[in-house]
Image 1 (cartoon, rainbow, N blue to C red):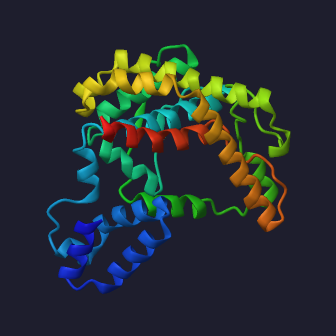
Image 2: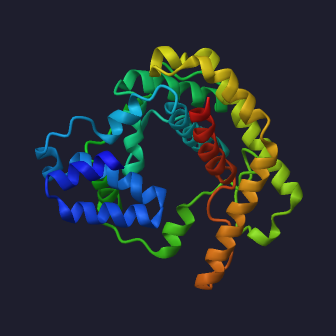
Length: 287
């Protein structure tokens, strides 16, 4: 953040530096990261010929990149589980939108590399090989713009009920149970145990993928610390439960604040992972 502040101040970009300060003060990591990524597309910043941008710094970090790989695999793993649970075939085309998709360039600029990993994930979940025509990944030119267009591309108006009925949320306790008006108050210790087992099942799948897909060769990641990462994740059940409970508590508090029913609207599968990935990055930099 010091380098960014110096760049903005040296080039008299006071408005951007003010936004930067406000983001740092709020301590909202999603806002800070989104701001850093946005600088890549800012014409004023580009004119300053910034020697090293945020994305390239992340891409060059051979250890920290593990967190982005696990995050990506978790997202695709979950999508594959939803599609299989709904009886859909493995996708032939897969595209991305929104600022979150910018991590693709952190992983690799090579579409073929990313495609091979993605195919392995779907094949693992479905328990079958991809058909001959395979999978095509489409990277968006402007990820945020693509998200906006997706909301207006269909000329037919849709009611709230139509939009709501299209939503599908896996509860997170296994690979087939959907959340149909499940409430946070109904989540008991038995459900928590199932969520944790589901996360551990994902860990198993991830490390099996590492055996088939060399992280060093494909993503230029430091493979020497993989055993330590594996040991940490497998021996962190207490923290998984804590992160899960904290996530549920925050969701309930948010619902109470706006007077809405505390219905589970996103998968509990990600609640432990959010805290675990934050903990993991600190662990990696302590090695």
